[in-house]
Length: 369
Image (cartoon, one colour):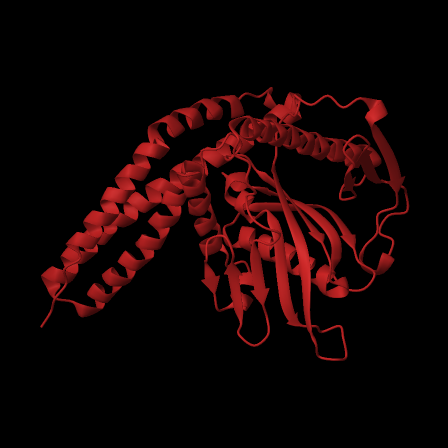
């Protein structure tokens, strides 16, 4: 006997989606996009390339968000039509498609709902991610490269623009450090919950004793500012070193000293850039990242001072926020949220949305307490 009653499921999806539309305010987004369209159409726009990039990036972000929200609305409309047709024709195949679409929309709308929780000052900006290997020798540097690939694959799966800014290769395997930019709507707010210490436990592929090896890598996420003019960096506060860019194994990829390393002497922050072709371009890119890091440090110090005055100083989490087990029980577990995956291969291939969404919800609850 044919039976298909998805009315309660669809109504629940509609209610959640209507709440999301109200928070996102698509009409306001559309008005902003129209204004940016006018600016983008100005023939003199590209006389100021920095402003032009700012305008086109903002326009792209708003269009992408509008398209995503409206796309979900259209899928809900199509689902209702599909259910009507399946019921009218008593078509079991179409009914199965409708049930599958309900499940798919539940995930899509849940992901969209999480984005409404991103209301921090810099959440909507692009992100600059830096990964550093920690204790663990070759396993740690290899782990750092695995994490870098994980985030780049995540960006690729979502069709987000990703650009590697700098990579320092280890003498053995993997990388010592890597910095890359992910340009997408709310990239910083989304990825900021990934910041912290990550731990890998596995049978080391670099040793002969087949012993379990534990290694660590740190993930830093900062927002990309269009203009970090709030931070003034005196020339006396920095040391600039130039050197030749190189690839894996020390192979020279540049015959001139075009790579740049800037050290901020008061804080010890070091930024290296070698992705651009000229020393001037690399210096400008490195200064921009340094300004952003100093601005974020300034904000963190202000927030810490406020917490101190309020008498409520607590660490956001312990020394490690996520563990990856690649021996015995294959498992990835977030120690803050309890989110788990029994498929580390998929996780390292960029399937980390469940961890990110759980982290965003965890942070929201924590901040509301």
